Length: 90
Image 1: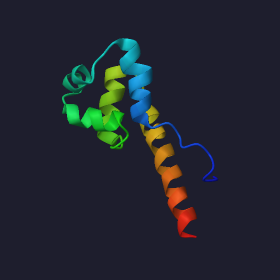
Image 2: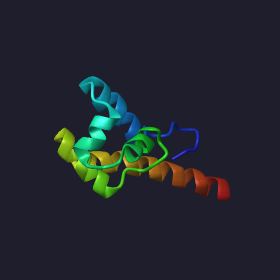
Image 3: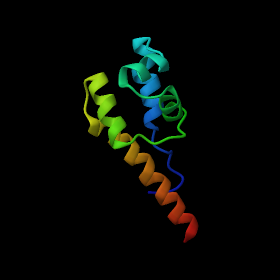
Image 4: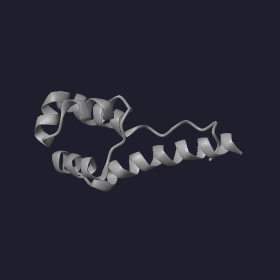
């Protein structure tokens, strides 16, 4: 993986663009549906927080998809960031 490659799309962006906006669902509505804080949803959407395994399960239940979908998005970002750090350190 070269650092010149584009960073994978953060799961928060996917959550917003592919789920919340098309469903006309607010962050507050999602937070209530999942039983989590609005801050948790907002920081994920803004790319400041990673999707945890627990959050992946909650999102999968809410959107009738797989927790692996959410975790794969997150791990792609994590691996890209780790590779960049290692390339800079080398």
